[in-house]
Length: 251
Image (cartoon, rainbow, N blue to C red; front, side):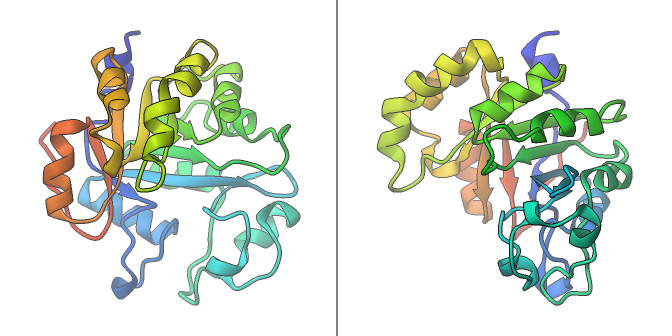
């Protein structure tokens, strides 16, 4: 399967960053309510995965619990059952497992799953995430800042789109322009990555343009206004957004 055919469904719609969250509407990020809102509006979904102490992939951004739940400790110190009993930001909403998210979305919209870097370099997060998603009926992609997790996804037999996440924003532009080819193209044979997910402020870097010209799809984050979307869209293949409602093209 060619890369464009593989990535096409993933890039077909604007992608809601950690779901269509809106604190004024009572929907916190990475919550079932935010994901359901994204589905209602026809957007793709981006989410984050961490690993619980009993090796269950769960939907959460931070490794530490405090900022989003008020609890002490880290995700990988508690069981999935304990984790899912926590409350997200005094909203009455609880986090869920990756399996629960897959059941919720059910293939209705594209799903982009970011595997968060783990403190244990031998973490089985990549493998178990792929096993959990086996047989999932809709478009799904995995991505990570950590190339070893991208490699683990491929080694686990996932044949769908995989991507490498890069910052490249202010303070990081030199790192991207100088090391992008050296670091990420070197990983290409092992990871066989199909797309880059990078800071929208880095879209004009020559290395990004070069990779797009040789067929790598570009996903830009996090686009927060219509003006940022208008500037970013000609330079990328899809946006990850929050804070507004970009139009969804007819498929």
